[in-house]
Image 1: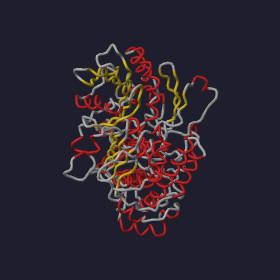
Image 2: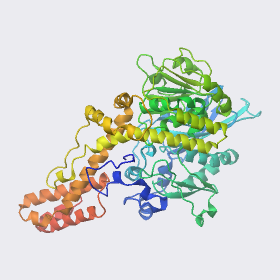
Image 3: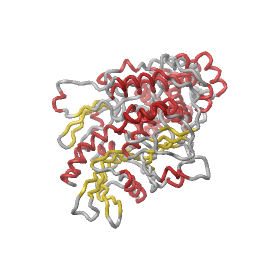
Length: 605
């Protein structure tokens, strides 16, 4: 989805229906959003197509209980629902990632999240249904293709009746959805109940979740779980960036226990506080897909900081690998720590001191202390100079030889420092920082959006009787020339080497992922415009000049177009597909009966 900016970016194809050109502010509040037609946009259709456990699967892959056995070590004790499938490799990953490292000393209850590779590409029976609901999600909230998230609630308490002297257990939600705030809130309800009442309440929770509506973007959902009702809204790619669309409605809210203003955003200010003098440099490192390691005292702080880094370039999707919590037992440990090649484009969150030695060759290391002592750390950070240290000391800081392309923005630092002195609420500081990152990312990406929009052929070049025209190629030199008059200086006060930053970005995985997505959307738009042009033609008149063979060929081509439009969910005007079906029917009626019978048969995929 195109990012919104001060100017509309699709000026060459003058189509008011183009989703890329919608003004996001015109579809707020949430109740006014009309979902595109499709399996996910109509609750009645949804009722008809969903089978038992389909609703559960739309939210979660499974729920695991991981315990500690003196002889076996960590082990998956229970998987719900019982029919859920996990490979042995996936179970091993979940076991090791669900427990903090022993040096973390996490007594009591701890929540954190991890991310791991999916063992094999399992085909879901919900495939096309989930693709439809994913289509309207913002880039950063689309389902993971090759990874799972694990959301953990870990409890460690003293228990003299156990040999080890401690009760240690984790309740883990495994999902493809990056809804970190939502799933942590869900665990706060489920886990204490589970630790008290054990398995029967897990079964009840799974049954509750299987009655939820699916997480379709744009809907406000009320989700009952174990006697509590959570109210959330799933964001869409059409929302105005930086705004929360959840609207209170007094009549129906009497039964709601928890209203979540966000399903995925972490507290950026709290996460970056230990290193907030360097936030702009960290933004550059994430934007460029540089290898980064976060060394933290606990999995909670490690995972929050990694998620904050990934989200600081929002609404741009971070396209490289990231591991909010990474251990020496991880299946990618050797791959990611080898010295025989340059560190990969990945962000790792670690807590084991062993990594200080193993990863000291990495180019960028963020060291954070206990976030509870944030006040003290800020004082230390004021005098700390950025250096490239061969060995790591225990002080918080950013250790790197990287020289930022952009000049430091002193304004945001002063604004946040002033907030600390005046005891401004954390939520307000978080909003200031999120807005700062959003404006910085938009200033950077708008020139790219504008240039890519210019690669779109003119609408008048689309002929219904020729193949849709191709997008022009992205030429780096041509793009660089546009920056002189239409660069980030139009929307950002920051000075510095913007050209150098763009050059570096164009070689990064984030650019590759962003451009592939934009090219796919624009190609689909061209296909949609071609289809609309075809529907406007007088096909009956045209076939009068055709032979029977040519007419059959036209029917087959139109059927192909129709199935492509349905399969790829092409962004056509409402009424286009019914019109195309009617055209096909009327052309078939002009043919002999034997051919009609053949052409009426549904085509095999």
